[in-house]
Image (cartoon, rainbow, N blue to C red; front, side, top):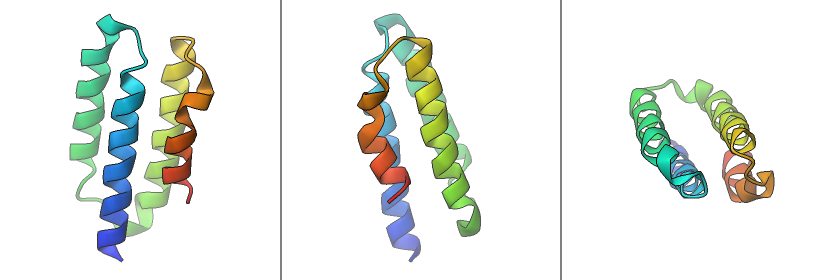
Length: 84
């Protein structure tokens, strides 16, 4: 079970980094670093909290996309990872 959740977290991380590439060029380094720091900080989380973290990942990604006027549809793959 843990291995499945770890794979899901890695897929979510990859999808978030792909979304960062859609942001304005001057903001990408900040959000890439922010993403990495958050995933590293939460690697020792209780498995019962993972679904909440996936929900927050998706919600925050949508907020950032909207902030920079990027179409929310870009996050459909992330939604699939976080809520499958």
